Structures are given as structure tokens and as C-alpha cells.
Length: 174
Image: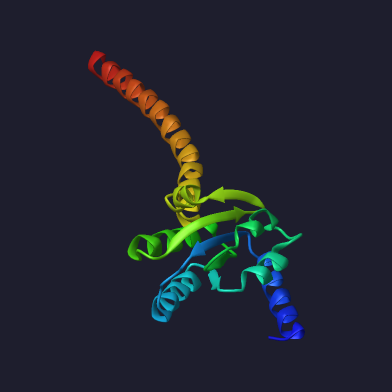
């Protein structure tokens, strides 16, 4: 490969890495093309991408960018997964694939420039995704006014029962 081809690869990886909020370095030694294709399809559904790049080119591409903290972890057969929207979804896709495949392993990651170990990526994968968190937040926000209305309804109901009892008592006395 000539210099211009290498420069084009470096620029492409650098652009994708700077757009990504989440980057994970993985080991894939011994995997088939079909298995890597399945991984790429799963990651695409989760809002991510998977790239296999020469280690030297990947190190150069990540130098000085958001994910600079993991650039020195590129050695042997490795690939990098980028997550753009929801890092939890990408972590789940990678973690699930690692459980299915005996050859695929998570090495390390960078979440918005902060380094993470493989076990931290697995812990991130166990968190609820963005939609679930928004649903829980909306449920909590909705509970406050609902409880407030129920509280006042109970106060008014008690007052109405007291007035009804007074009315019945006066009706019996009359």
C-alpha cells in the first residue's frame, strides 16, 4: 500500500473516531469472515461500526483525538468498534457477541476519552438502554403530580364524608 492509501485510511479512521463517543478495542484472532460480518450487522443495528485496521495506522489515527487513551493498546490481531449514539447499546452488542464466540474478546475501551477495562464494558452492557432510562424518568416525573392529585382527592373525600355524616345526623334529628 502506498503513502496516499495509508493517509486516506488514517483520515477515515480519525474522522469516525472523532465522531464516536465510544471506542472498544477487541481481539478477533481466528474468527471467520462470516462471524465478523455478523458482528458488523449487530453493531450497525446498535448504532455502531467495526473496523479492522493495521495497528500502526490505528495508533496514528487515534493520536491527539478523543480516544487517545487507548491508542497504545493496538497490538496483534485487533479491531476497533465505534459507538455513535448510545454506548450502552454498542456495549451490549459487543458483550453478547463475545459470549457467543469463544475467539472474540473485549480488550479495552474509551468512553468520551476516559479509559475502560473489558469488565467495565461488560458492566456498561448491563445498564438499561437510553429508551428504558427515558421511560423510567418519565414514569418518575409523572408519579409526582399523580400522587399530589391523589393526596388532595383523599382530603376532599374525607371532608365530603364528614359533611354527609353531619347532613344525615341533622336529618335524623329533624
